Image (cartoon, rainbow, N blue to C red; front, side):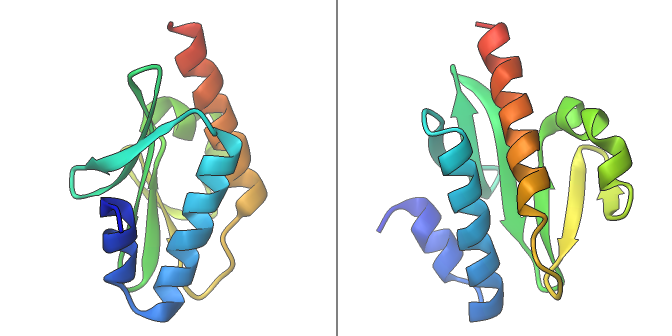
Length: 115
């Protein structure tokens, strides 16, 4: 079991399922991303640069796509509670998979352009 598996398995089943779904969306959208733990949460890097992070909480799944990922999709993310560089997806609602895929793809293209 790697660090991210260990992180995810520390949550109740309902949250664990959402975290696994988030992980799958990220790894399928950016298959070359390197997975690790940073800042105490699952983190992904592409071309040695941060891509996205996510974290589980009792009432939401936190998603961190750096300020540029959130700025690019500000209108669509406006329906969710946000902080600086973060968005909160409530655990009592399905994850917005299509939106997450588009954000990860956007960030991946940004990282590739910076290479």
